[in-house]
Image 1 (cartoon, rainbow, N blue to C red):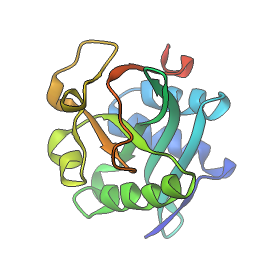
Image 2 (image 1 turned 135 degrees about the vertical axis):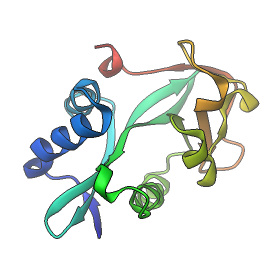
Image 3 (image 1 turned 45 degrees about the vertical axis):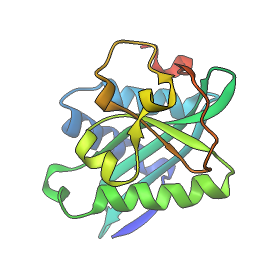
Image 4 (image 1 turned 180 degrees about the vertical axis):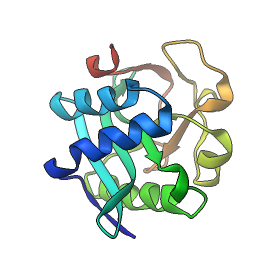
Length: 161
């Protein structure tokens, strides 16, 4: 499995796997909007013998007045799930983000999966989601310890679809 930065030739396949994984087009449209917008940071794919098996994307957000990063969307094709690909995408993306001097990440997702990778409830840091979600699914991780400050997350306009 090769983890690499997305390329233009991957866009259709990334749209397709997001549609499959999320049973609809919201996440694929979100990825397209992020990619075209000012808040795009990073997008990686997991490639298996030329086939895109997984995708992860990050964009700029604010928590109060500090810059932060949102992880969204992320998906792995059903036939590739439970094989460590999602974990590999996260770990590899962290290397890029640390190199880019990013300090922390916010994610809305599956508690069991993300907590294994070091994500914790955002509420424990005083970080609040701008819309109503259960506390346990709104999570954060500090890439640089002590970098999180309490506040409400402000997503980029790309998320307003």
